[in-house]
Image (cartoon, rainbow, N blue to C red; front, side, top):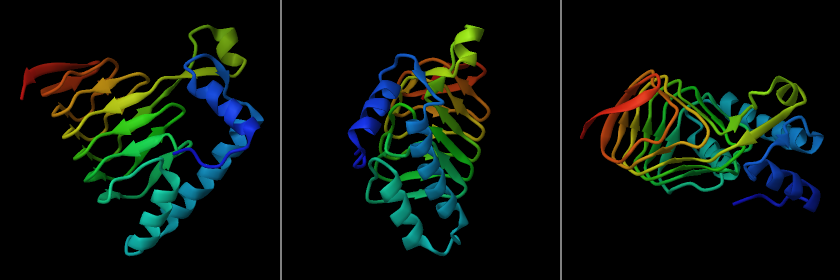
Length: 192
């Protein structure tokens, strides 16, 4: 659920999430990013034993959570409200989610340490890129997915339910349901 933004903020966020080019250096977006960075900083400074406080910040920060979930610090995201996690979600240390577009995780998703999910991309054209433009594409991860350590998922990727992504993989295209997929670029190697 998107927080109570002003009409101006909503217009700028809608452009960002449209899939079209937008100005990543837009002051309106930078202000929202700064607020999210503050909440992530607050979360990451809490002691591991402060479970109630950690859960409260994550429930406020994220767009949707299941009843049961755990994210071990440090955790970083750009906006937070674009992230939806299902029931029984677990993420180990150093999870980074650049959620300029929606990032959706199903139920029973387990993420090993040092994984990154990037919805933001930059144009190949140098002049356009240097002018501060970027685009965003959603990422979807199905139910019962295990993502190994050090995995990177790029904009627009869908990972099918019941799949396992091997450690160190770079997921650059959709992964079907029920497969073991590994490599750079990540490719299915067998059915599970």
